[in-house]
Image (cartoon, rainbow, N blue to C red; front, side):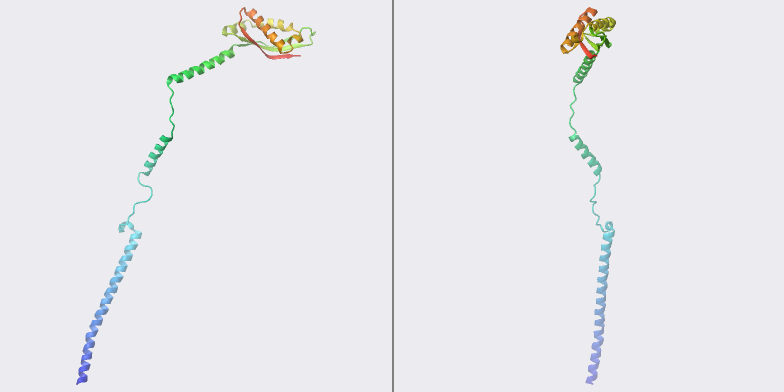
Length: 213
C-alpha cells in the first residue's frame, strides 16, 4: 500500500511539473518573438532613415550654395570693382578748350611755316669761263616773310627766275665752290629777289639741290 501511495504521489508531482515546464517554454517563446520583433522594427527604422531620410525626420540642411548666393556674389563683385576702379579726374571745360586752342595754334603755326616756303623751278646754267664744259644744276627755295610776300613771289616767279639765271651763269667754278662761296651766293640771291619784289620780304634762301658737273 505504501508503494502504491508513493507511485501516486510521483505521478501527481509529474503532472504538476509538466504544466510549469510548458509555461516556462511558452514564456521563453514569447520573449524571443518580442526580441525578434524589436530587432526587425529597429532594422526597418535604420533602413528607412538611410534611404528616405525625410520620412525619419533626419533631413539636414544643404551644405552647398545657399539661396541668393548668386545675387550676393554679384553684389560682392560689384563692390570690388567699385573699389578697384581708379578715380578719373575730369578736367574743366575751360582747360580742355585751352588745350584744343593750343593744338590748333600749333597746327596752324606749322602750316603757316610750311606755306611760307616758295619753291623756284630747277635751274641749269653753264658756268662762266668753262666754255660750256661745266654747268650748275640747282633747286632753290625762298622763305617769305609772310603770306603776302609769298603771293608776290609766285606772281613774279618769271622775273625772279630770270634774275637767278643771270646771277648763276655769271659765276665761275671757284666762286661757287665751298660752303663760304655758297653762303655768299645765298645773300646775293636774297638781295636780288628783294629788288624784284621791291620789298625786303625774303628771310632765307635754301639750296635743296646743288650739283656742279
